[in-house]
Length: 222
Image (cartoon, rainbow, N blue to C red; front, side):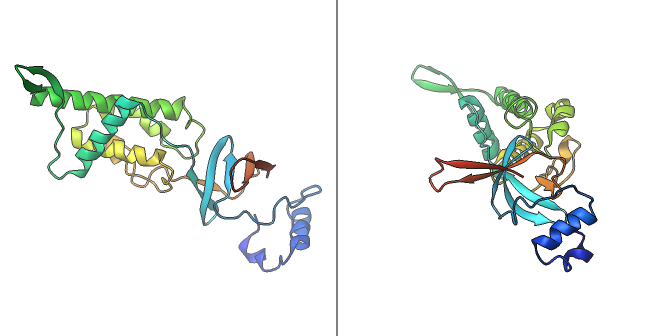
């Protein structure tokens, strides 16, 4: 990186190489890439991502790995989002059986216990994905927060649990570039912003140049 007060003096690649030699004391420096275009696809220390912007000394990146859940987890997440979105905070009842031509539904207490159990299981799934699954190499995650506060999460009421699960779901989403509110599990507001330093000297970064069809990919190590 070039300090701001020197940026006006470096007008071309020759000046940049001279700066690297004389100021940074690099041996035989070379310019691998003049500019890294916005929305470039990268593999950053083993994790695929896309550049979405810049902030001071950091680059903003977003996730490219979609969240995949099984059928039961998907149903739980749908119930969570429905509960989170409704003002009256209604928990959907599940069918228990049919008797004499009538549908029997679970009672209020059973419904509440089942919903809490399913939310606890979904939280466990998210913890697994962050620690052993496809997201374990993701940068600036909420991994530590999720691991250390699982028991605290289990003690929350339904409304607070849904808020935490919705927040974590946003962090798994492709568009989850901003931080989320994890204050209910001893976190902070705006936690987990997906950024990396512009100085990639200590990182392994690979630029992926894909064809329009996506069938052909050229990999360039930066």
